Image (cartoon, rainbow over all chains, first blue to last red; front, side):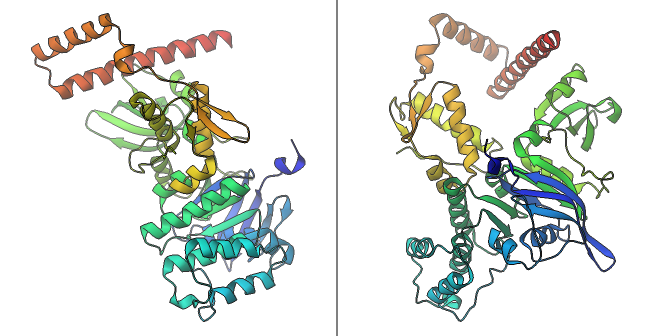
Length: 309
Length: 140
């Protein structure tokens, strides 16, 4: 294995950011391997945008650090800005520029700019270079913004709610292009999104933030394998269930519980009459989002059983 | 060229949906030995799904002996699936027919038959799983 392949695309060590008296993000530690598509999930105000802004070098951390391909991100430095493409929610473009002007602007700002890629995408999408940005549809503006991000030719692409304002067809077309680029160039992508159902098909790595704390982090397959949905008699105590109980729905005679336990743990605690099913993506994410924000034990973020470490 | 589709609301993991579609098309004869499957990039771009999901599905198909990757060319169908009529021997078919007639006579609706089959299948899977765990425990 080459050195480059073993360096994580993202690595946060006790990363924290304080705004006045309030911590927007605290004690956040995780690693993500290169080539992953990371889903970043959390309620509004959970710290998603703070984490992205720290990663791409728009903000400086109060404590700890985040490194992109082994190099710590530093706020407002050319080195950091050149390694990461960041697409903010509102697709910042100069509305009075033409598409061609916007691309030339991108070229003048970025040393590794791939102008052929930018022109090729505009042609494939049928977006005329002479058209002004403000005359484009929302979907086309998003595609121009994505083109600016892709033509920078960075190994990491950070997307903050990139398709929140788009209609379903435009969303699909946008994500089709992102996924094709991941397949083609081995890009690492981090996507903050509220659309959980959409994330299931996009991401293979998951980060869940609530209240400025990392609640869950790991490869999706491992996280799903590390949880199970059990149907058990109502009188079953939480203490008799395998692993931590994340959510529990009680009926008159039976209860359905989501537990942080892999197959072996479930088998070890097994009682006749129990029913075990694999945990689903949406169920898992919602369970962690609904839990009250837990301050992680010192130095470590709370992680599920399936987390690879 | 074979095209995949994805149902986001089915609850079936995306990679399994891809595997099922290949198996189903083989059973129906829409996919045949020698056919080429779309590239990982084509499927990822077409369905807007994670390329690793496609890789996982193709690996599963290779594991099942249904597809094989040829370096620099792509992934091709190499296996066939016997259709249910070829599969089930006369005896198996006859016993199923007798069982279904008994069930109807006993007053079981189609839904009840489906539920009973699912329950028994689940029990068998649990037993197999338990034996598996036990066997692993002995080895370990």
